[in-house]
Length: 181
Image (cartoon, rainbow, N blue to C red; front, side):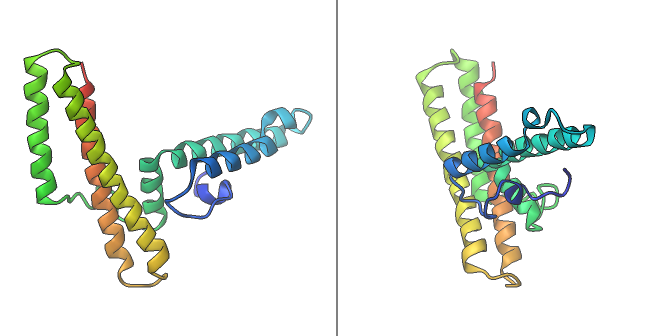
C-alpha cells in the first residue's frame, strides 16, 4: 500500500525507539484482524483487500523490526536526505574504516576464516556498528523530543542521522567482507 505510514498501520507512535515487544504485539493484533483466513467467506473484493492489507502489515513489520531499515524509513518519512543526496561521513571515520579494511584483506590472505583475529575483528566491527546506530537513536530522540516541528535545527539533525546511517552501512559492508568466503 504505497504511501501508507507503517507506524500508523501498526498502531505505533512515530519514533525510532520502539520495543520489539510492542511491535510484535501490535503486528499480531492487526494481523489477526485482517488475515485472509478470517475473510474466506467474504466477497472477492474483501478477500483481495485482506491479502493486500496482510502484505502491507508484513512489509511494515519487516521494515520496523530492523533498526537500520526503521531508521532509513523514518528518515524518509521526515523528509531527511537519502544516501544518494548526502553521502558524507567524517574523515576520521573513513580513515578508521580504511585501516579496518586493510586488516580484513591481510587476514583473509593470511589464514583460515575462523581465526581468533578474525573473530576479534568481527566483534570490533559489530561494536562499532552498535555505536553508530546508538548515534542514530540519539539523533532521532533529539529530533522528536527536543525539537518542535518547524525548528530550523531539524534539517541539521536529519543530516546528522543520515551521516550515521551512511557509516552504519559502511560497517555492514566491512562485516560482509569479513564473513565472505
